[in-house]
Image (cartoon, rainbow, N blue to C red; front, side, top):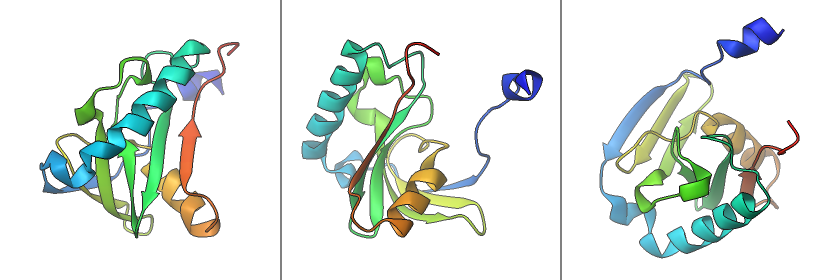
Length: 127
């Protein structure tokens, strides 16, 4: 099993960039992302580029980008995912960088649990 995990590079999907416009990510929403990331860092839960944060917005979500380092999160490391199709493995998004490879997992959680509005995926420092 360990050998399989060493080669893991995340979910492969087709990314469709609808625009590179950061304003569609709603700049005023960066603050809660930064605050959450700061708390994760305080507890040692931001190794390298592990973990991600998302916030449900309308029929899409704002999510950290692929490879984002939550320990030093920057504004261009969040994007708006307008469409996330598990069936055809396509993610359509607005923003300058690729969305997290965990976009499908976040989308499926939002679809199955209407009461959830945000997701924080972090790594235990004991790992």
